[in-house]
Image 1 (cartoon, rainbow, N blue to C red):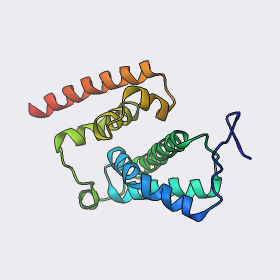
Image 2 (spheres, rainbow, N blue to C red):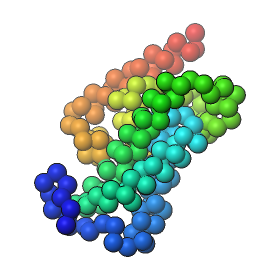
Image 3 (cartoon, one colour):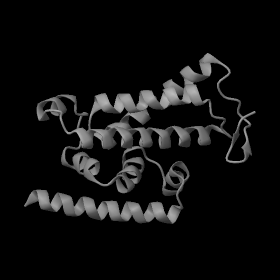
Image 4 (tube, helix red, strand yellow):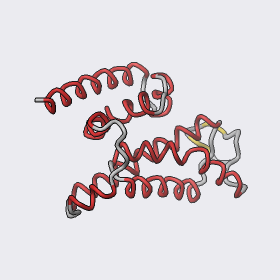
Amino acid sequence: MLRVKGVRSVVPFGTDETIYSQVVTEYSSMLLRLACTRLGSTVDAEDAVQETFLRLLTARPAFRDREHEKAWLIRTTLQRASDIRRKAERKRSVPLEAVAETAAPDKDGELLSAVRALPEKYSAPVHLHYYEGYSIKEIAKLLGLPAATVGTRLARGRERLRQMLKEEER
């Protein structure tokens, strides 16, 4: 049995093809929304989620329970999205028109754009709390942070959002 951070797995993972399809069905839309918020591009977000599921297939991690599995998927998606964003920032060769065509649907307009513009340490907790409906304790578990840190990042993220939106109004 695989070991993850010194804990024996109680959920054997990777033995059945149906388990993978269940995981993809259950988490793909949530992971895609999370990656879209981070990247601002549906195409890049799909790549991040696809890489996450590919890593799941190849690494075959062992999970203690469903919450551990979900947290791993969220963290891995955020890491993949960060990798894609860093690569794009280095290249900066995509025409602005192409980015506008592939941008994620922006229901809340300015607000979602502002959330995307936040630094990652603020945007991930803000997105998980306000768009996915997680509590501070749940976000803390998902991101592997103390609850107090998540609360602080939410407060600071909200304050930055207020400042960004006030500046846009002017």
